[in-house]
Length: 370
Ligand code: TXA
Ligand code: MG
Image (cartoon, rainbow, N blue to C red):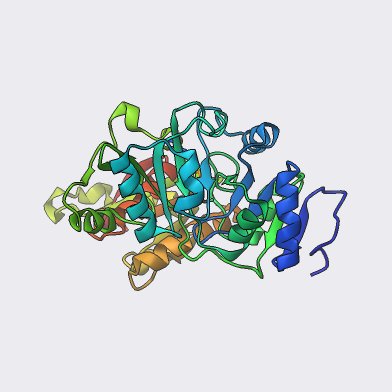
């Protein structure tokens, strides 16, 4: 590829292959106040040195991110994150156990912040969100720069997160940023980390993600004095990033519910007319399916794609943002996604948290008219 390692002055965006030498160079750039876009096992991040006020502010402005939405701080693990926290003995003990169990990996832990944490990183909230990513390049940069790196997901605020190089290039090619090209690395999990809050020996989920409620319950059940509590709806416990719509494709997304009327409820003289209206509504839409549930109706739609034709939730999560990105480039009126949110599975909340936030509304179509 011609543009790797080249200085693309015109676009100002520079792309680096993932050599050790380049990671040292990028560590220097982070310390000089530049921004780095890097892959992780969840989604790509856009990061800066937490102690560089100007660079942190630049992340907010480049992404058009609301000023009240704090950034996750990326560290190597428990020991380098400890100075950023202000925990009593018990919570520090749980923090370390959580880190031992889940790090490096897709779990972000929100705890009381110490005084050294710059207030523009956590929006002066008194808390800090810390995650230890499981990907070689960003770990090397943290190691070489010896600084924690604050990074939100690498997308414009409210838009679909990025899971491969093409996605981040589309968003940031014309900005002064440094992008790591990790041999076309595609994120392993496809969705963001789970964000939890740890306080007074209680854990609560702030954002559903790849680590499930079930995983956290298993963790808590191993010990006597720590509990998983549901505080998601308490106002002082809502993660600022969870309030607005998010992950949105560039055309409206609706959740499709298929319902069935008993035959005696159908007005036969109106049936043809309603079938025509339904056909017209569907024919300019793309359907996103799961587990081939709507396969028999696929010709009713302009296009059809299945997140996992054999009902594998991990595959569906892996594909979700990629499908959204692909549909951004397709000409259609709207996107419909089949409502598989009622099917019980440990990953249902993880994936439906994203779909619910990305969608505008639900629609109901009687299968009698298909
Ligand atoms: O997988 C991930 O978590 C990715 C990769 C790049 O690490 N990052 C990510 O960052 O998804 P972002 O900024 O898109 O989402 C961070 C979430 C937001 O909902 C934000 O409000 C919440 O974490 N958050 C960050 N700091 C917080 C804090 N101090 N207190 C409460 N919530 C916080
Ligand atoms: Mg994000």
